[in-house]
Length: 139
Image (cartoon, rainbow, N blue to C red; front, side, top):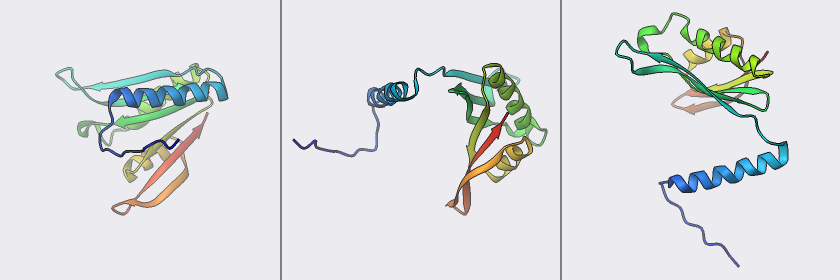
């Protein structure tokens, strides 16, 4: 029997969750149950709203930084390094051996390199002349 395939440009939430649940179940079978824990370091504006920060998670011995944004008002003050240092400290306390992050922003890449991260993968000219880079730091 052939399974018909369709293509759409929208992803229903329940479909995303079903696929993610299947991947997680497969990975748990392959690698054992995960110890994944979320990690969030907000930066708040004067009005109390979140306008930057770091979102990531730890799991299987690694910190993965999903999102890191330093608001314009705090750029050039070492804030990215402070966010990374705090996340790394927590990751170590959770038993992690390293961290990884990716970026297309050359300024962010240099900030991560200053914080001790090294590029381990790159797609050159990924978009509009910018490379996308994957960076790693072992603790």
